[in-house]
Length: 144
Image (cartoon, rainbow, N blue to C red; front, side):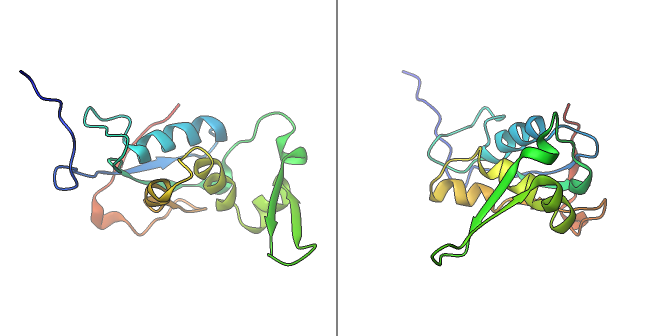
């Protein structure tokens, strides 16, 4: 009788990937990154374990939004106080904090659990072409 392989924290080997998102469409990048963070690209994928890789995104300030999203898409946050809801258009968010656009898109595609939080912590986003993760020897990944 053959046994089903189940990954354990000891057997998980994490890799580092760098993705340059300059001129790429936000939704397509976010789905590919969420898949890498969850580990669904691996044969050892286990739904109840974090089997994913680390992902470094560079040039997040130059990501592309299709259609009228630059003018119409709203980003909301709440201070926790009464009447503390703040809304900003994508155009304003891109000027003030461009990495938030990518972070929120990827976060929305991960599980809303402690496991999803652990996966999200492996995402590093930088607005420009430089990143401080050269010591991890990340591989450059081309995403369509």
